[in-house]
Image (cartoon, rainbow, N blue to C red; front, side, top):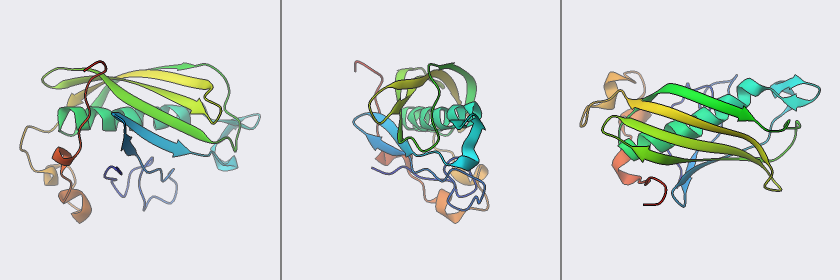
Length: 162
Protein backbone atom coordinates (compact mmCIF):
# COMPACT_ATOMS: atom_id res chain seq x y z
CA UNK A 1 0.00 0.00 0.00
CA UNK A 2 1.47 3.36 -1.03
CA UNK A 3 2.16 5.79 1.78
CA UNK A 4 1.45 9.54 1.58
CA UNK A 5 4.08 11.87 0.12
CA UNK A 6 4.83 15.50 0.86
CA UNK A 7 5.28 17.20 -2.52
CA UNK A 8 8.32 19.31 -1.48
CA UNK A 9 10.28 16.54 0.28
CA UNK A 10 13.79 15.91 -1.07
CA UNK A 11 13.35 12.15 -0.87
CA UNK A 12 9.69 11.48 -1.72
CA UNK A 13 8.47 14.80 -3.11
CA UNK A 14 6.76 14.58 -6.47
CA UNK A 15 7.28 18.31 -7.08
CA UNK A 16 10.91 18.65 -6.01
CA UNK A 17 12.98 18.84 -9.22
CA UNK A 18 16.20 18.12 -7.28
CA UNK A 19 14.78 15.26 -5.23
CA UNK A 20 14.80 11.48 -5.45
CA UNK A 21 11.02 11.17 -6.04
CA UNK A 22 10.67 7.75 -4.39
CA UNK A 23 7.33 6.21 -3.44
CA UNK A 24 7.38 4.58 0.02
CA UNK A 25 5.03 1.62 0.41
CA UNK A 26 3.87 -0.53 3.29
CA UNK A 27 4.53 -4.23 2.62
CA UNK A 28 4.36 -7.06 5.15
CA UNK A 29 4.82 -4.84 8.22
CA UNK A 30 7.75 -2.97 6.62
CA UNK A 31 8.15 0.32 4.80
CA UNK A 32 9.77 -0.42 1.45
CA UNK A 33 11.36 1.93 -1.08
CA UNK A 34 12.70 0.88 -4.48
CA UNK A 35 15.39 3.09 -5.99
CA UNK A 36 17.89 2.97 -8.84
CA UNK A 37 20.64 5.59 -8.49
CA UNK A 38 21.62 7.69 -11.49
CA UNK A 39 24.90 9.44 -12.30
CA UNK A 40 23.62 12.63 -10.64
CA UNK A 41 23.62 10.70 -7.34
CA UNK A 42 27.30 9.78 -7.63
CA UNK A 43 29.67 10.38 -4.75
CA UNK A 44 32.99 8.84 -5.75
CA UNK A 45 34.15 6.36 -8.38
CA UNK A 46 30.66 5.69 -9.79
CA UNK A 47 29.29 4.82 -6.36
CA UNK A 48 26.14 6.16 -4.76
CA UNK A 49 26.82 9.10 -2.42
CA UNK A 50 26.64 8.14 1.26
CA UNK A 51 24.33 11.07 1.99
CA UNK A 52 21.77 9.69 -0.46
CA UNK A 53 22.01 6.30 1.27
CA UNK A 54 21.40 8.01 4.63
CA UNK A 55 18.45 9.94 3.20
CA UNK A 56 16.80 6.81 1.81
CA UNK A 57 17.16 4.94 5.09
CA UNK A 58 15.93 7.94 7.10
CA UNK A 59 12.86 8.27 4.85
CA UNK A 60 11.88 4.61 5.22
CA UNK A 61 12.46 4.62 8.99
CA UNK A 62 10.59 7.94 9.33
CA UNK A 63 7.50 6.37 7.76
CA UNK A 64 7.81 3.22 9.87
CA UNK A 65 7.88 5.43 12.98
CA UNK A 66 5.04 7.71 11.84
CA UNK A 67 2.78 4.77 11.03
CA UNK A 68 3.79 2.95 14.23
CA UNK A 69 3.03 5.96 16.44
CA UNK A 70 0.13 7.13 14.23
CA UNK A 71 1.58 10.65 14.35
CA UNK A 72 4.09 12.78 12.50
CA UNK A 73 7.63 12.38 13.81
CA UNK A 74 11.05 13.98 13.64
CA UNK A 75 14.40 12.21 13.53
CA UNK A 76 16.07 12.32 16.95
CA UNK A 77 19.04 10.12 16.05
CA UNK A 78 20.23 8.16 13.05
CA UNK A 79 23.07 5.64 13.15
CA UNK A 80 24.32 4.15 9.89
CA UNK A 81 26.73 1.45 8.94
CA UNK A 82 27.99 1.28 5.36
CA UNK A 83 28.80 -2.33 4.47
CA UNK A 84 29.78 -2.09 0.79
CA UNK A 85 29.70 0.49 -2.01
CA UNK A 86 26.56 0.85 -4.11
CA UNK A 87 27.25 1.11 -7.84
CA UNK A 88 25.37 3.70 -9.87
CA UNK A 89 22.58 1.95 -11.78
CA UNK A 90 22.10 -0.82 -9.20
CA UNK A 91 18.50 -1.71 -8.38
CA UNK A 92 18.02 -1.18 -4.65
CA UNK A 93 15.47 -1.99 -2.00
CA UNK A 94 15.27 -0.10 1.27
CA UNK A 95 13.27 -1.82 4.02
CA UNK A 96 12.50 -0.45 7.47
CA UNK A 97 10.53 -1.66 10.45
CA UNK A 98 9.81 -0.77 14.05
CA UNK A 99 11.92 -2.36 16.80
CA UNK A 100 9.77 -0.92 19.58
CA UNK A 101 7.37 1.88 20.41
CA UNK A 102 6.95 4.01 23.49
CA UNK A 103 4.41 6.76 24.05
CA UNK A 104 6.17 9.42 21.93
CA UNK A 105 9.19 7.48 20.66
CA UNK A 106 9.72 4.91 17.93
CA UNK A 107 12.97 3.00 17.54
CA UNK A 108 13.37 1.69 14.01
CA UNK A 109 15.83 -0.28 11.92
CA UNK A 110 16.43 -0.34 8.21
CA UNK A 111 18.56 -1.91 5.53
CA UNK A 112 19.58 -1.07 1.98
CA UNK A 113 19.79 -4.19 -0.17
CA UNK A 114 21.00 -4.90 -3.68
CA UNK A 115 18.83 -6.80 -6.17
CA UNK A 116 20.69 -9.99 -5.18
CA UNK A 117 19.85 -9.43 -1.50
CA UNK A 118 23.34 -8.22 -0.56
CA UNK A 119 23.45 -5.81 2.38
CA UNK A 120 24.94 -2.44 1.42
CA UNK A 121 23.96 -0.38 4.47
CA UNK A 122 22.06 -0.77 7.72
CA UNK A 123 20.70 1.79 10.14
CA UNK A 124 18.89 2.35 13.39
CA UNK A 125 16.88 5.46 14.14
CA UNK A 126 15.00 7.08 16.97
CA UNK A 127 12.00 9.21 16.05
CA UNK A 128 9.97 11.43 18.36
CA UNK A 129 6.35 12.43 17.89
CA UNK A 130 5.96 16.08 16.94
CA UNK A 131 2.20 15.90 16.54
CA UNK A 132 -0.11 15.53 19.51
CA UNK A 133 -2.73 12.80 19.22
CA UNK A 134 -5.62 14.13 17.20
CA UNK A 135 -3.74 17.26 16.14
CA UNK A 136 -4.55 18.46 12.64
CA UNK A 137 -1.68 18.11 10.15
CA UNK A 138 -2.31 21.63 8.86
CA UNK A 139 -0.05 22.82 11.68
CA UNK A 140 2.89 21.26 9.83
CA UNK A 141 1.82 21.59 6.20
CA UNK A 142 -0.41 24.69 5.93
CA UNK A 143 0.15 25.12 2.18
CA UNK A 144 -0.42 21.56 1.01
CA UNK A 145 -4.01 20.41 0.43
CA UNK A 146 -2.85 16.84 -0.29
CA UNK A 147 -1.19 16.52 3.12
CA UNK A 148 -4.29 17.84 4.90
CA UNK A 149 -6.11 14.74 3.66
CA UNK A 150 -3.55 12.29 5.10
CA UNK A 151 -5.04 9.76 7.46
CA UNK A 152 -2.33 7.70 9.15
CA UNK A 153 -4.97 5.55 10.85
CA UNK A 154 -5.54 3.60 7.62
CA UNK A 155 -1.97 2.24 7.85
CA UNK A 156 -0.62 -0.14 10.47
CA UNK A 157 2.82 -1.40 11.44
CA UNK A 158 3.77 -3.41 14.52
CA UNK A 159 7.08 -3.75 16.35
CA UNK A 160 9.18 -6.79 15.42
CA UNK A 161 8.01 -9.99 17.03
CA UNK A 162 4.50 -8.72 17.77
